Length: 375
Ligand code: ACO
Image (cartoon, rainbow, N blue to C red; front, side, top):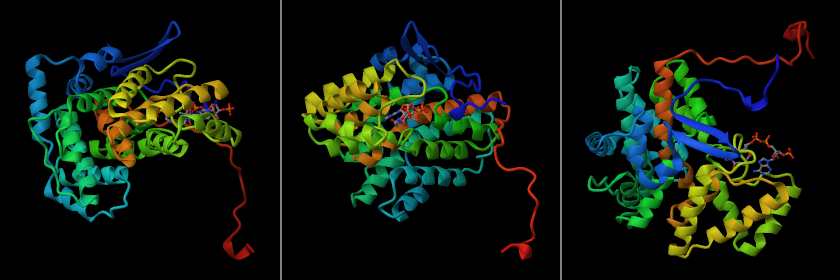
């Protein structure tokens, strides 16, 4: 038996949701066959979520219906608001999110119905409610009144409105919209694989999403975005970046927001889009984080040959939007929920239990010594 540590290079399933490939030295990312650059330029998060869930771009009428359905599903049941009120205010919002999703599952009497129609309905509900959970918890923990969902606003606008209490300008809401599109799916990343493993046992969709949120939170995956802004705050000025990077590398520590299992020597196409977005926002908002980030990226490439990943510039985008540091991972989840649920449904529809093997390397054939004979 050959062991591939970290399952590197292993093809674990077939998918028709997103394609990550390197062609002629250039990385390609497509959702359902549509290039991520086209989606970032022309699409909206709602349209991208529809595409991921249903496989094709919607007609104008289908999109309108989908947007209306999401708007109708945004509000949270009173019990969930009660839960958010009772959780300690120092609880990390990602822990809040997974607890609230689990609670939503406990309230759904049909949670075990995993046929296509029920699963799609539950996916829509989760896509609609996750922004409300994040925004409401933030308002509650900071002692502010809840700002209820506004059906006049789209998904990204409404989230910023519920979070901050004012309708965002077009540049801010479009920046978040594009960020959510770019985070919506990425083949078999750790959290999506986790979701698919849970789905392969025919666990309910809430259980699968809770499992995915747990995996996303780790600093080697989505948790890196929060670590990136913490690093930029520590560096504080661009001219300290190289010295910081060298010190980290000397200590054999990882620099968050760099390196990727799939994009080893090619730039992640999402990074191109997010870098442009971060640069534009920094200029408009007068934010210093992009300039520091650029110096960090130069130094990491010079001294370690590593390229930035999706978490690196998204941290600069969120910082320019004035989003609190610990909401970066929940916002990643807010985008990725479309991909998670699409993958869960794909797994349900063509399921075989995911159960790999391990190469046993422990001791063998040991003689059991009864407790009374042991020292
Ligand atoms: N900083 C410093 N060194 C790094 C980094 C990094 N960010 N990433 C990889 N390396 C080094 C390793 O130390 C190792 O070096 P060595 O050969 O000299 O020992 C080499 O690169 C290979 O590293 P692996 O851990 O084997 O690469 P792997 O493909 O398993 O890891 C991962 C990918 C986990 C993303 C890694 O690059 C990392 O830890 N990055 C920092 C965390 C991060 O940004 N995560 C977000 C990833 S994107 C996402 O999930 C949304």
